[in-house]
Image (cartoon, rainbow, N blue to C red; front, top):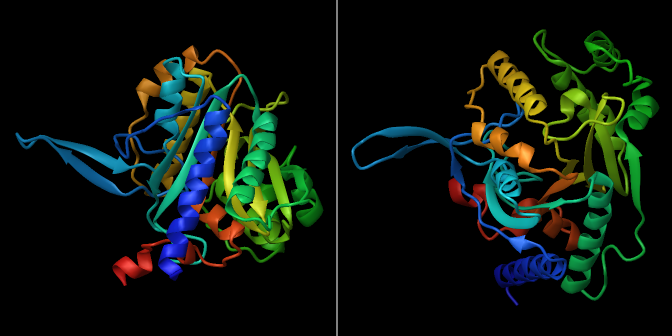
Length: 323
């Protein structure tokens, strides 16, 4: 079998396994828009900007999604309980190759009636299921999926207590470890710099890293002490594979977070997108604990087939298209 045909066959098997896993659990597959007005507010992401133009010439500022999250949560607010989608997402200012590509495939799923611990367990079951469908010699057979709090990793590798850490404490850690930072860096920026330099290289094996500081909570509900977001990421041999939450459904708190993220984007001279008011209006209709997860299918493909570069599992990658 040719290399191209092998990649296509593997991806078909992975996607079929995803659909079988969720169909058997009563999930409905949904399609969400790729071109939207509000693609995401996170300060570390750079969407692709475009225009939607009517025949009369009227223009509407738009962008390609960095995640289908907003649309998926609107469907939850409209009464859907268990949904998943397989879609293309787009992030500008990404590297060409390695673990990154500006356009990549994402699996995202949500369920009302569970929390992020339930989602971690389901993610483990999903990966094992796909692994078994893809190959007889399972990559994850007998692999222990560990769970570690972010604050425990920071305590171990930086001696920083995240329970009480302020922006000056984060700057001190950067100074002590020779990590470059800018004067206008936010708490979130500094945390991210330290995480990439001191924490991520020390995450080994297959490990769920969970409970991120409030400023990294994104769209997740907070822990009971209000200090951390009920958010997790799964790392396999140092590679981040997914990002999951217990979803925030409080409209006022979500609006405040959107405003904070907008202000961060302004400070960084990044384009600020309108707050998705339709999402805020629908959030109160989600009246149960709800979890969601976004998993990079290309990276999962890499891990399962023991390939080292994302372009090795793509039929068309940015290097091939643009260079």
